[in-house]
Length: 440
Image 1 (cartoon, rainbow, N blue to C red):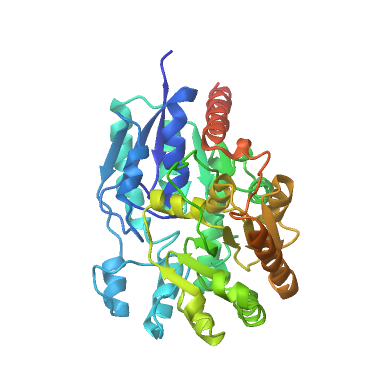
Image 2 (cartoon, one colour):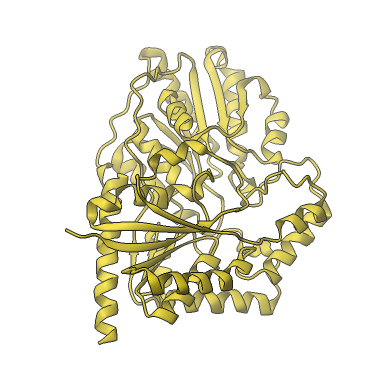
């Protein structure tokens, strides 16, 4: 059986690391099993928040990867804020500086109002021109764009319009509904332009896919032809050589921007280490990844430095091992307007690690529903200090009686990357069929 070809337009691709690369790297890993051959279009010189060369091992042999240079204004931005050209630009308004410069705020204002939809906007027209030429010589059955950055959707829109090809717009995060949209300091005309471009994308794409049902429903209300929620997921990456930590370790993997810096976490650790000498003797919080300066200030404020270990970004394969060796895993949800619908890729990796999850987020949110359904852990609401203390104390009692802590997650197989790729391949086929009907 010959494979249909899908052109995937993505900004993030190995050696780029972090959360943004995982979703489509894993889809590409399994798409051949479901009838589609991937062709990946990505920048040759992107601005990468972190690098992770180990992710290249997930790229199937023989995949065509098309790379074209991109011009981004980050060299200007770095000069503006006074950082070295080699320094990385953090995402999600995470600042590692003790005194963020006023120039950073001006930079955010310029980015939001003049680089629309994002700082990769200068790549849109060159990419449309290049891909139009490429596709006149190379047959493609369907186009996929994945954002943010949403400039990838604008590229797909231009190519789809010109060559009349079916197109799936995949949103790993929403556009104007993203939690930090109000921090972009948009002027009225810029806000209108963002919303106009968003509307064009979701109404012209043959299919819109999202990671949460709430986002899918929102895009349907805004006029999307077809929507489907295909969540993030986990890959089967278990390591037989992993040994569970001897101490009572609580491990968080991933960045912690200000919206995830929850006061009750630090207060609960302070109280339990003061009130329970045996807890203080065994407890260790490991924060693996970039942390906002506000996190370090909170740790100092509550005088819990000796119970906290801050570890810089590690390769994804190493992060998986650390998750599987932890006594417990810490999940922090952004305290934002869309908190109830947030389901990060890390959450599903946590489920697969089969370690008890301690979460801070909305008790009536989608994340806590899955936690309860799968019996994988417990959640405290953003301001519910008593519940968080109780969760930690109860797990510590279990730890004292039985090491390591055990858990039996159930019903999580539907979140495997292979199962989710099958869903995405079905969307491709539906989009192709729908597009052909409209042409005829």
